[in-house]
Image (cartoon, rainbow, N blue to C red; front, side):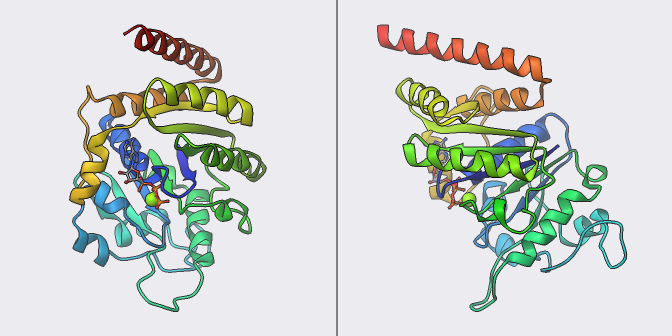
Length: 274
Ligand SMILES: Nc1ncnc2c1ncn2[C@@H]1O[C@H](COP(=O)(O)OP(=O)(O)OP(=O)(O)O)[C@@H](O)[C@H]1O
Ligand SMILES: [Mg+2]
C-alpha cells in the first residue's frame, strides 16, 4: 500500500501522517514514511528529537531508485538513509533544504516518484508520503505520487481547504492514483462533521472519514514532542476507521461509508438533544 498525504498548508497532513503510520505499526505492518517537505517535521511527530531530525541524512537529489543500471535498490536506500523512529516507523528525509540557494527540489520529487515505482513492497508493507502543501507535486512532470495507490486529501473545516481538495481530485485521478479521498480534520462535533459531509458532497470530494479536533494534538506540538494517542482516544479511533475504509474492498467500503454517515447523523441528533 502506497499512500500520499496531500492538502492545503496547515490542515494537519503531518499530524495525520504520524497517526496513520502509528496505526499501521499497531497492525504489525512494516511502515516507511517519506517526508517530502523542504522544512520537514514528521520526525518530531514520530518521536525523534530536534537534533536527530536536523542531522539525519537526506536522500541525495536525482537519485533513481529501482533495479536498473545506476539505480539504487530500495533495500540499499533504506539501509543508507532510513531513520529508525521510536514508534517503529522508518523515516526518509527526501527534501530537507539546509543551505540558502540550494536550488529547486524537482529532482528530489523524481527520486520519490522512482521510489514509489520501485519494488518498495518488498521492504515495507505501507509507504506513506507526507507531501509539502499545494498542488505542484501532483502536476510536476510525471507527478511525485504517480505510483501511489491512495491519495488522502486532508481538509480543515474551511471552504478553502475543501476547494483545495476538490482541485486535487482531477489531478490525482489524471496521474492514475486509483483511490482519492478527502479526510475532514480538526472537526468540532457536530457542526464541523455536518459541514464536511455537505461541503464534500457539494464539491465532489469523496469523504473517507472525519478526525475530531483534539487539544492533545496542539499540546504535543507545543512540547515539540510526539503525539501517541491510546486506543480509546477519539483521534486514534477516527484514524483506525479511515484505515478500515481505505483497506476494505469496494463494496465493503461503500457500506462502511453509509454506516459512518448514519453514526454521524445519530451523534448530531444526540448532541442536539443534550
Ligand atoms: N486533529 C487535530 N486537532 C487539533 N489540532 C490539530 C489537529 N490536527 C492538526 N492540528 C494542529 O494544526 C496545526 C497544523 O498541523 P500539521 O503541522 O500537522 O499540518 P500540515 O498540514 O502538515 O502543515 P504544513 O502545510 O505546514 O506541512 C498544528 O498546530 C497542529 O497541532
Ligand atoms: Mg506538514
